[in-house]
Length: 400
Image 1: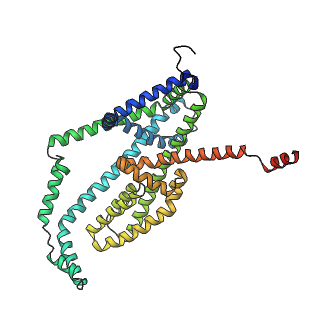
Image 2: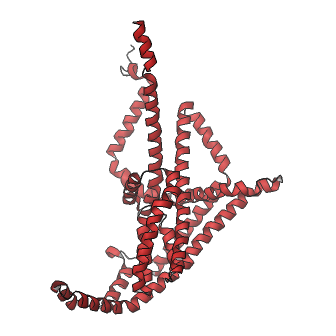
Image 3: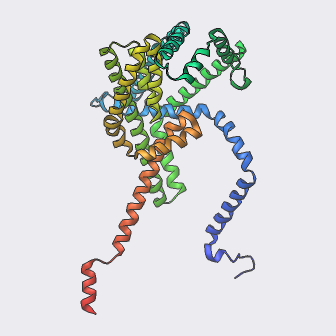
């Protein structure tokens, strides 16, 4: 052994030893500067948010574009149609998504405004009626009746507190205190959205070239075996994410249509708006249904408190059928994640990233679940292959 050769290089080899030392150095730097790294993550995400949002928009639009390209000019032999087909599909997918957002804004915002107006006008009457009902029907419960008798509602003071909260924000943060702040926030949001939309269009228009470049980088950077592993992981993740998005969307549309039909049949108010809200909120796994039911009950309550109870019974029954019959067929077959893991993914994802974390956590968990299943099955098969079969054991015994 030469004087310059390190003793550990005998065990690991020169390249592995260098890699090990570099990894140890990176881990040491990460531990030393852990707080700085964690504190810089929100800043990095805020700077890269338009790019991240653009990539998400491109991925969602690509799911629609793939299905459009199967049918739009699929058998044409005209070269100009073939060359422009992707741009036509991008335009159709973009118009479709924008139309959905316009529908949401057009149906939900006016209805919510009207509902809050009605609630502000009628809530004092509802309070008096509820107080009278409790006093008449719970006469024997002295503790409750005494408390309700002394209970008074200062509606003007409550309204002023709500308005003050809206103006000053939570925790003293000035949310709407300045017109300039509002205008700058709206302008910044619009600018970021335009950047994201432009980036998404560039990604979609040059998808094939980007894929080719990515595959070329993988071929150069890693060996063939690792390349296959990376490609398999990405394909599994793509299958889980696209299946989750398609399944949740179809499930939301069906739930919204059934909600609208049921409310129209039973003569309940705000049928279209509640249906849109139910379908939209159902995109969030597990808790989305409860949010939609609560919002729908509130809206129906502002128009008719007695109908709100029947709506709650109807929406609970509908979502029970949807959760046990439709959801497993639409989403379960594509994601294939047990309910326990869905609940765990939603809980952890919601704690880390709110609504967006819930949406992303389920397909990520499904990807890890599938990969772990494949690894376990492969190891089990390898272990069984190494064990001698009963015929081989008998042969060995006879020879002895």
